[in-house]
Image (tube, rainbow, N blue to C red; front, side):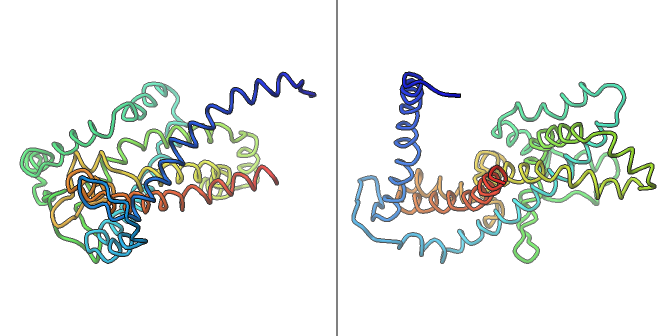
Amino acid sequence: MVRSKKDVIIGIAIVVPSFILVLIFVYGFIAWTFRVACSAWDGQLPNFTWVGFKHFASLFSSTRFQIDLWNTLYFTILFLAVCICGGLVFAMLLDNIVRGENIFRNIFLFPMAISFVVTGVAWRWIFNPTVGVNVLLERIGLSFAAWNWYIDPSQIFTFHVALIPVVIAASWQYIGYIMAMFLAGLRGIPDEIIEAARMDGAGGFRIFMKIIIPSLKPIILSAMIVLGHVSLKIFDLVYTMTGKGPAFATDMPGIYMFETTFQGNHYAEGAAISIIMLLMVALVICPYLYYVLRKKEG
Protein backbone atom coordinates (compact mmCIF):
# COMPACT_ATOMS: atom_id res chain seq x y z
CA MET A 1 0.00 0.00 0.00
CA VAL A 2 1.40 3.36 -1.07
CA ARG A 3 1.20 6.00 1.64
CA SER A 4 0.85 9.65 0.70
CA LYS A 5 3.24 12.28 2.02
CA LYS A 6 0.39 13.69 4.12
CA ASP A 7 -0.17 10.31 5.84
CA VAL A 8 3.52 10.06 6.64
CA ILE A 9 3.58 13.55 8.17
CA ILE A 10 0.47 12.80 10.27
CA GLY A 11 2.02 9.54 11.46
CA ILE A 12 5.24 11.27 12.46
CA ALA A 13 3.29 14.06 14.21
CA ILE A 14 1.44 11.44 16.29
CA VAL A 15 4.52 9.42 17.21
CA VAL A 16 7.04 12.18 17.91
CA PRO A 17 5.41 13.58 21.12
CA SER A 18 5.23 10.09 22.65
CA PHE A 19 8.82 9.41 21.59
CA ILE A 20 10.03 12.64 23.22
CA LEU A 21 8.11 11.94 26.45
CA VAL A 22 9.49 8.39 26.68
CA LEU A 23 12.98 9.66 25.91
CA ILE A 24 12.77 12.23 28.73
CA PHE A 25 10.73 10.49 31.44
CA VAL A 26 12.05 6.93 30.97
CA TYR A 27 15.54 6.93 29.50
CA GLY A 28 16.34 10.44 30.73
CA PHE A 29 15.54 9.53 34.33
CA ILE A 30 17.45 6.24 34.03
CA ALA A 31 20.49 8.24 32.92
CA TRP A 32 19.91 10.71 35.76
CA THR A 33 19.66 7.88 38.31
CA PHE A 34 22.93 6.40 37.03
CA ARG A 35 24.57 9.84 37.35
CA VAL A 36 23.34 10.12 40.96
CA ALA A 37 24.60 6.58 41.68
CA CYS A 38 28.08 7.66 40.61
CA SER A 39 28.03 10.80 42.74
CA ALA A 40 28.87 11.57 46.38
CA TRP A 41 25.27 12.57 47.25
CA ASP A 42 24.98 11.32 50.83
CA GLY A 43 22.55 13.64 52.60
CA GLN A 44 19.66 15.95 51.94
CA LEU A 45 21.76 18.43 49.94
CA PRO A 46 22.79 17.34 46.41
CA ASN A 47 26.46 16.60 45.84
CA PHE A 48 27.31 15.58 42.27
CA THR A 49 31.02 15.03 42.82
CA TRP A 50 31.98 12.05 40.59
CA VAL A 51 33.04 9.00 42.64
CA GLY A 52 32.74 6.36 39.91
CA PHE A 53 31.43 2.91 40.84
CA LYS A 54 32.25 3.23 44.54
CA HIS A 55 28.65 2.67 45.70
CA PHE A 56 28.18 -0.35 43.44
CA ALA A 57 31.33 -1.96 44.88
CA SER A 58 30.30 -1.24 48.48
CA LEU A 59 26.85 -2.75 47.85
CA PHE A 60 28.23 -6.08 46.68
CA SER A 61 30.43 -6.23 49.79
CA SER A 62 27.41 -5.45 52.02
CA THR A 63 26.05 -8.44 53.95
CA ARG A 64 22.50 -7.12 53.75
CA PHE A 65 22.63 -6.69 49.97
CA GLN A 66 24.07 -10.18 49.53
CA ILE A 67 21.16 -11.57 51.60
CA ASP A 68 18.76 -9.54 49.45
CA LEU A 69 20.14 -11.06 46.25
CA TRP A 70 19.83 -14.59 47.64
CA ASN A 71 16.27 -13.83 48.83
CA THR A 72 15.39 -12.50 45.38
CA LEU A 73 16.82 -15.60 43.70
CA TYR A 74 14.93 -18.03 45.96
CA PHE A 75 11.73 -16.00 45.80
CA THR A 76 11.90 -15.88 41.98
CA ILE A 77 12.47 -19.63 41.62
CA LEU A 78 9.66 -20.60 44.02
CA PHE A 79 7.26 -17.94 42.71
CA LEU A 80 7.74 -19.07 39.09
CA ALA A 81 7.51 -22.77 39.98
CA VAL A 82 4.29 -22.43 42.01
CA CYS A 83 2.55 -20.07 39.56
CA ILE A 84 3.48 -21.96 36.37
CA CYS A 85 2.85 -25.49 37.71
CA GLY A 86 -0.27 -24.44 39.62
CA GLY A 87 -1.61 -22.33 36.76
CA LEU A 88 -1.13 -25.20 34.30
CA VAL A 89 -2.90 -27.69 36.58
CA PHE A 90 -5.84 -25.35 37.19
CA ALA A 91 -6.08 -24.55 33.46
CA MET A 92 -6.20 -28.24 32.54
CA LEU A 93 -8.85 -28.91 35.17
CA LEU A 94 -10.90 -25.92 34.03
CA ASP A 95 -10.49 -26.94 30.37
CA ASN A 96 -12.19 -30.25 31.10
CA ILE A 97 -14.93 -28.95 33.37
CA VAL A 98 -18.43 -29.18 31.91
CA ARG A 99 -20.34 -26.61 33.95
CA GLY A 100 -19.50 -23.57 36.03
CA GLU A 101 -16.37 -22.58 34.11
CA ASN A 102 -17.18 -18.86 34.30
CA ILE A 103 -17.66 -19.04 38.07
CA PHE A 104 -14.34 -20.82 38.66
CA ARG A 105 -12.52 -18.57 36.19
CA ASN A 106 -13.75 -15.44 38.00
CA ILE A 107 -12.80 -16.92 41.37
CA PHE A 108 -9.26 -17.61 40.15
CA LEU A 109 -8.91 -14.22 38.46
CA PHE A 110 -10.37 -12.17 41.34
CA PRO A 111 -7.02 -11.78 43.21
CA MET A 112 -5.63 -9.91 40.18
CA ALA A 113 -8.10 -7.11 40.92
CA ILE A 114 -6.50 -6.54 44.32
CA SER A 115 -3.35 -4.52 44.84
CA PHE A 116 -0.25 -6.07 46.36
CA VAL A 117 -0.69 -3.73 49.35
CA VAL A 118 -4.10 -5.21 50.21
CA THR A 119 -2.80 -8.73 49.57
CA GLY A 120 0.13 -8.09 51.90
CA VAL A 121 -2.06 -6.80 54.73
CA ALA A 122 -4.51 -9.72 54.41
CA TRP A 123 -1.83 -12.43 54.32
CA ARG A 124 0.07 -10.74 57.16
CA TRP A 125 -2.97 -11.43 59.34
CA ILE A 126 -3.51 -14.94 57.95
CA PHE A 127 0.07 -15.98 58.76
CA ASN A 128 0.19 -14.12 62.08
CA PRO A 129 1.62 -16.74 64.48
CA THR A 130 -0.82 -15.86 67.28
CA VAL A 131 -4.13 -15.09 65.57
CA GLY A 132 -3.86 -16.48 62.07
CA VAL A 133 -3.69 -19.91 60.51
CA ASN A 134 -1.95 -21.34 63.59
CA VAL A 135 -5.20 -21.00 65.54
CA LEU A 136 -7.03 -22.94 62.83
CA LEU A 137 -4.39 -25.68 62.86
CA GLU A 138 -4.68 -26.02 66.65
CA ARG A 139 -8.50 -26.26 66.53
CA ILE A 140 -8.47 -29.06 63.95
CA GLY A 141 -5.82 -31.01 65.84
CA LEU A 142 -2.84 -30.15 63.62
CA SER A 143 -0.98 -28.01 66.12
CA PHE A 144 2.28 -29.83 65.22
CA ALA A 145 2.14 -28.03 61.84
CA ALA A 146 2.07 -24.58 63.44
CA TRP A 147 5.22 -22.49 63.24
CA ASN A 148 6.28 -18.86 63.30
CA TRP A 149 5.76 -18.31 59.57
CA TYR A 150 7.23 -14.99 58.39
CA ILE A 151 8.87 -14.18 61.73
CA ASP A 152 10.86 -17.43 61.79
CA PRO A 153 14.57 -16.44 61.49
CA SER A 154 15.81 -19.97 60.73
CA GLN A 155 17.34 -20.81 57.37
CA ILE A 156 18.43 -23.80 55.31
CA PHE A 157 21.83 -23.03 53.74
CA THR A 158 21.12 -19.48 52.48
CA PHE A 159 17.36 -19.98 52.14
CA HIS A 160 15.23 -18.25 54.80
CA VAL A 161 12.10 -20.28 55.57
CA ALA A 162 10.26 -17.00 56.34
CA LEU A 163 10.11 -16.48 52.55
CA ILE A 164 7.60 -19.33 52.17
CA PRO A 165 4.55 -17.31 53.37
CA VAL A 166 5.58 -14.47 51.04
CA VAL A 167 5.77 -16.86 48.09
CA ILE A 168 2.32 -18.24 48.98
CA ALA A 169 0.80 -14.73 49.10
CA ALA A 170 2.39 -13.63 45.80
CA SER A 171 1.42 -16.89 44.08
CA TRP A 172 -2.17 -16.54 45.30
CA GLN A 173 -2.38 -13.22 43.47
CA TYR A 174 -0.81 -14.31 40.16
CA ILE A 175 -1.74 -17.97 39.76
CA GLY A 176 -5.17 -17.11 38.30
CA TYR A 177 -3.59 -14.82 35.70
CA ILE A 178 -1.18 -17.57 34.63
CA MET A 179 -4.08 -20.04 34.58
CA ALA A 180 -5.96 -17.76 32.16
CA MET A 181 -2.91 -17.64 29.86
CA PHE A 182 -2.59 -21.43 29.85
CA LEU A 183 -6.34 -21.87 29.36
CA ALA A 184 -6.22 -19.72 26.24
CA GLY A 185 -3.28 -21.79 25.00
CA LEU A 186 -5.06 -25.09 25.66
CA ARG A 187 -8.12 -23.88 23.77
CA GLY A 188 -5.84 -23.14 20.81
CA ILE A 189 -4.63 -26.75 20.46
CA PRO A 190 -6.72 -28.46 17.73
CA ASP A 191 -8.75 -31.40 19.06
CA GLU A 192 -7.92 -33.36 15.90
CA ILE A 193 -4.24 -33.61 16.89
CA ILE A 194 -5.06 -35.03 20.33
CA GLU A 195 -7.66 -37.42 18.92
CA ALA A 196 -5.18 -38.64 16.29
CA ALA A 197 -2.59 -39.25 19.02
CA ARG A 198 -5.12 -41.25 21.05
CA MET A 199 -6.03 -43.33 18.00
CA ASP A 200 -2.31 -44.10 17.60
CA GLY A 201 -2.29 -45.46 21.14
CA ALA A 202 -0.70 -42.50 22.97
CA GLY A 203 -1.64 -42.25 26.66
CA GLY A 204 -2.47 -39.13 28.65
CA PHE A 205 1.09 -38.58 29.89
CA ARG A 206 2.57 -38.97 26.39
CA ILE A 207 0.02 -36.55 24.94
CA PHE A 208 0.84 -34.10 27.72
CA MET A 209 4.60 -34.28 27.13
CA LYS A 210 4.62 -34.52 23.32
CA ILE A 211 1.69 -32.29 22.32
CA ILE A 212 0.45 -30.07 25.13
CA ILE A 213 3.78 -28.91 26.60
CA PRO A 214 5.39 -28.12 23.18
CA SER A 215 2.23 -26.22 22.15
CA LEU A 216 2.36 -24.17 25.35
CA LYS A 217 6.08 -23.29 25.14
CA PRO A 218 5.49 -19.66 23.98
CA ILE A 219 2.99 -19.16 26.83
CA ILE A 220 5.37 -20.71 29.37
CA LEU A 221 8.08 -18.32 28.20
CA SER A 222 5.72 -15.32 28.41
CA ALA A 223 4.62 -16.40 31.91
CA MET A 224 8.25 -16.67 33.01
CA ILE A 225 8.95 -13.15 31.73
CA VAL A 226 5.89 -11.63 33.42
CA LEU A 227 6.50 -13.38 36.74
CA GLY A 228 10.26 -12.86 36.56
CA HIS A 229 10.09 -9.10 36.25
CA VAL A 230 7.42 -8.96 39.02
CA SER A 231 9.59 -10.94 41.42
CA LEU A 232 12.79 -9.02 40.69
CA LYS A 233 11.25 -5.62 41.46
CA ILE A 234 8.81 -6.71 44.17
CA PHE A 235 8.41 -4.22 46.99
CA ASP A 236 4.84 -3.41 48.08
CA LEU A 237 3.73 -6.96 48.96
CA VAL A 238 6.81 -7.73 51.06
CA TYR A 239 6.93 -4.29 52.67
CA THR A 240 3.29 -4.45 53.85
CA MET A 241 3.36 -8.15 54.76
CA THR A 242 6.68 -8.73 56.52
CA GLY A 243 9.00 -5.77 56.02
CA LYS A 244 12.62 -6.86 55.99
CA GLY A 245 11.84 -9.63 58.49
CA PRO A 246 14.04 -10.97 61.30
CA ALA A 247 17.74 -10.88 60.34
CA PHE A 248 16.69 -9.65 56.84
CA ALA A 249 14.91 -12.99 56.30
CA THR A 250 12.39 -11.45 53.87
CA ASP A 251 14.37 -8.39 52.81
CA MET A 252 14.44 -7.50 49.10
CA PRO A 253 16.49 -4.98 47.09
CA GLY A 254 13.36 -2.79 46.72
CA ILE A 255 13.00 -2.45 50.51
CA TYR A 256 16.72 -1.81 50.90
CA MET A 257 16.53 0.91 48.23
CA PHE A 258 13.47 2.54 49.86
CA GLU A 259 15.04 2.64 53.33
CA THR A 260 18.43 3.79 52.03
CA THR A 261 17.04 6.56 49.83
CA PHE A 262 13.96 7.93 51.56
CA GLN A 263 14.62 7.11 55.22
CA GLY A 264 18.42 7.27 55.35
CA ASN A 265 18.85 10.06 52.76
CA HIS A 266 21.73 8.11 51.14
CA TYR A 267 20.62 9.06 47.66
CA ALA A 268 23.70 7.89 45.74
CA GLU A 269 23.63 4.43 47.34
CA GLY A 270 19.87 4.17 46.81
CA ALA A 271 20.29 5.10 43.14
CA ALA A 272 22.97 2.40 42.81
CA ILE A 273 20.51 -0.21 44.16
CA SER A 274 17.91 1.01 41.64
CA ILE A 275 20.35 0.62 38.75
CA ILE A 276 21.23 -2.92 39.86
CA MET A 277 17.51 -3.79 40.06
CA LEU A 278 17.05 -2.38 36.54
CA LEU A 279 19.91 -4.53 35.26
CA MET A 280 18.39 -7.63 36.87
CA VAL A 281 15.07 -6.98 35.13
CA ALA A 282 16.91 -6.30 31.85
CA LEU A 283 18.62 -9.69 32.15
CA VAL A 284 15.14 -11.25 32.07
CA ILE A 285 13.47 -9.01 29.48
CA CYS A 286 16.25 -8.61 26.88
CA PRO A 287 16.62 -12.34 26.03
CA TYR A 288 12.84 -12.49 25.60
CA LEU A 289 12.84 -9.49 23.24
CA TYR A 290 15.73 -11.06 21.30
CA TYR A 291 13.76 -14.32 21.04
CA VAL A 292 10.62 -12.50 19.81
CA LEU A 293 12.55 -10.48 17.22
CA ARG A 294 14.37 -13.57 15.94
CA LYS A 295 11.05 -15.41 15.69
CA LYS A 296 9.50 -12.59 13.66
CA GLU A 297 12.49 -12.46 11.34
CA GLY A 298 12.44 -16.25 10.95
